[in-house]
Length: 126
Image 1: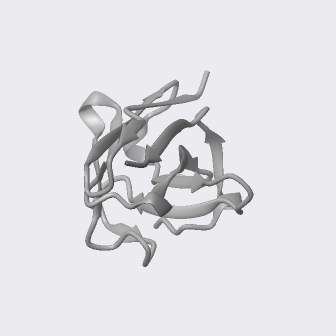
Image 2 (image 1 turned 60 degrees about the horizontal axis):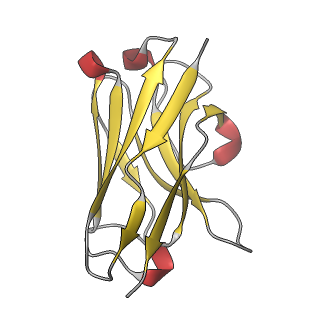
C-alpha cells in the first residue's frame, strides 16, 4: 500500500540544524511531487516546501527560504528536508505528503496532496 514515513525530528537549540527524512513505499516515487508541511499547536497547517519528480524543481515558503533545503533520491525512495538556522517559530509537527497527480508541478496547497505521513515533531528551544 502507498505509505510515507517521516523521521529525523527532535529537540534542537535555536540556530541548530536537523534533517528530516521521508521514506516512500508502495508507489513509484519518481512519478510524483512530494511536499513538506508543518502544523504548530493552535495554528493552521502550513506548506513548507515541495519538489517535483523528475527535474527536481523546488518551492519554499517565504518563512523558510534560505534556511531549508528540500532534496530527493528517487533511487532510494527518499525525500529530505535539511533545516538550518532553526528558530523557535519552526516548532511544529512536520509531515511529508504525495501530490495527488503524477508528473505534475508542485505547490504548497495542502488539499492537493494525498496520502500523508504520520508526522515527526520538531521542537526548537533553548
